[in-house]
Image (cartoon, rainbow, N blue to C red; front, side, top):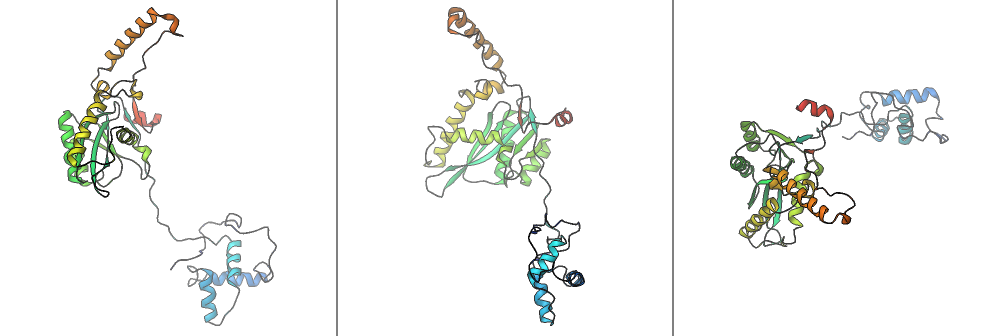
Length: 315
C-alpha cells in the first residue's frame, strides 16, 4: 500500500514541505481549530495503526468506526504545518557510480572497445561490429563482424586481439553492455592481469573514443545504407580499417595516422614535415606571417581527465 505521508525523521519547515504559509486560514481548517483539537488530531495521526497511511485512508477508517475528527484536506494541512507530509519509507537507493578516470601515455596503456550494429539486407537484420581502439593513438588493433553478440564471442575476440598484438593492455575500458560485463570477459581479463574499467550507466561521454570512431565509420561516404550479406560487411570493414589505421590523418594526432602514432614513427614523420616547411619558408618567406611548424604530437590521452589526486595514485 502506498503511503501518502509519514512522520519525518528530521523536522521540515512548512515552506520546504510545499505548504502555502502566506494564505489566510480557511474556515474550519486546522489553523482555525482549537489547539487542543489540533493536538488530538495529530496524536491520532501518529498512532501506530495510522502512521503508515495517507490521510484519505485514516479519514475513511475513522469514519467507518463512527468517528469524524476533520476533513482529509485538514489532515494534510495539519501534517504539512508540522513538516510531516513527506514519505518516510526507506527508498531504494543506488550507490553513486564512480566516474572512470583513465590516462594513457603509451600505445597499450588503455584500450577502449565497443560493439555497434551494421544494417543487414533486410529491415530487421543487423550484424555486430566489435572494435578495439588504443586510445593514445586511436589505432584499431582488432575488429570483428559477427552475426550476433555474445559473451563467448567477445571473450574470444579480446583474446585474439591481445595475442595478435603480443602484449596485453594495462586497462580495457568499455560501457556496461551485457558482453562487456559478462563473466567470460571478466575472467579473461583477470587471468591476463588487465584492469577492467566501465562507463557510468547511460553516459556515452565515458567511452568517447569508441563512440567517435563509430561515427567516423558510419559517416564515411562509402558506408552503404545496407549490407547485402555478412561477407559484404566484412569486406567493407577490412577496407575501412586499413585506410583508417594507415591513411587517415587524425586531427587529434597532429594529422598523423593512428598507425604511425601507435608504432612510434610519428616523430620522424613530423621532423620530415618540419624540413619541408622550412624549405617552403626559405623559398617564399613573404607568403608566411611567421615560420611555419607542423602540428604537435599528443603526449597523453585520457577518458575524463584525471584529477591531480588520481594521477598521484596511478604513479
